[in-house]
Image (cartoon, rainbow, N blue to C red; front, top):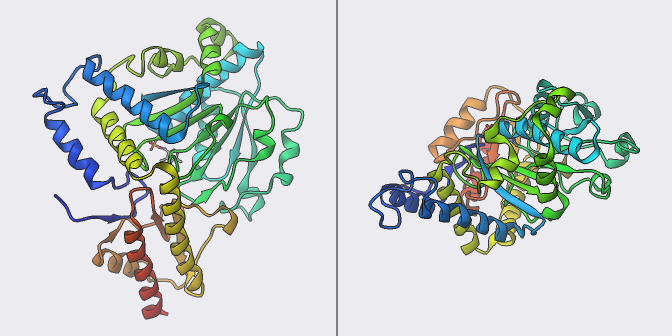
Length: 392
Ligand code: PMP
């Protein structure tokens, strides 16, 4: 039992209480087995069903076409940075017999980190643009396509990478860049760690999606991958020796995508409790009307929050350009100095927690992931208003 939290932390996020109550019961005794879901073999019938169910529910929620495969991997988003680079560089070699750089669209610290990891692993990679170069050396905007689309013309990339929602800086791609999606030769890879299932997307436009679980879909420990089957086929054609000769990294076996898929996400021991929690979140979302209903609620939540911050714009500062404001992570600062501690303290007194901004940005960040109710956001809106009025 617990009181409904109003936790605005950037991740791990709060999860629906109902889901956690069911998970707690299943941790003790799953399907009347007399054993908890975390205690059974990952190859048992019951564990296999958890994997199948999670996959089927995610496919339903996201309308994932048969051209794409879903799998789950241990590790987080950062693990995804590494194994994306090594697996997809191999796919390109298999497809073309050549090496081409991966292209990164950098709009915040997570896409920057993904780029740095590719380079660290000696996967050829370049930055197509860094949004800092268009915005006074700061993140907080996304340049319009006309400002950078020339940079991809006539060039070959093993893949092009973007982070749909930059969790730290509160910058979200409003839609995918058309110069990328319109080019059939470009394999688009996207990190959806902090906005998966928050809005409807067309999965067929992506070569690959990765998303760490601990924001919209569950507990930390697992990452969801959605990948085009043709890419899996290509990766499985490449021999490690060939990669070695080309100076490309060899993917550790537990992160080798075709191996994981061939073994239904259980090549090695998958944390089945963590996956079960994820599946309970999927079921919960399906029962509430799926992604379209969630999207409508998320839009309302973001609107009332940005509206109040805009209304008190003499008191609060919003560093992100309107066109790319995140609907998941609302970043703001106080114009007056010396009040940050008071803001956090008074927020906590009203039960509003997790509002401290990322250490690299300062100020505040209200993460309003799927499990944050409209009511929680309304409480925050009231507080933001009250605080501005009593400290103006
Ligand atoms: N990508 C995004 C968009 C994130 O927000 C995060 C973590 N907050 C990561 C990647 C890294 O995830 P992890 O900590 O699970 O490695």
